[in-house]
Image (tube, rainbow, N blue to C red; front, side, top):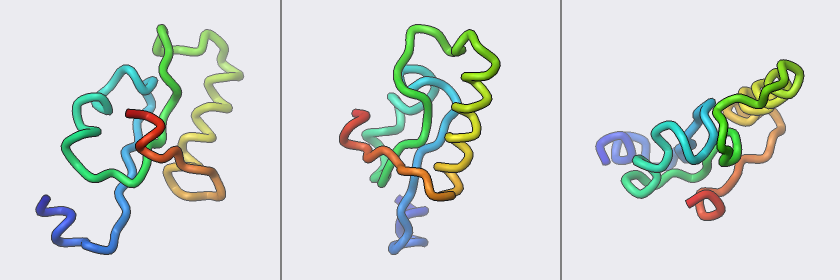
Length: 79
């Protein structure tokens, strides 16, 4: 709440490398008004199993987190 009060016009994104159903997202998503989520989709495994696929996903996550022309997923579709 203090962060939101300090930056009332800011939109906050949650960014994580882990799949949506892993990491801290499921803990924090209902505790702060995030505007969006940047991370891998839900998966049974934390790794893709392919170095090429991992590199492509990682590049997409970094670009989306830095707003480099990538679409950010709205929170409502990831709750």
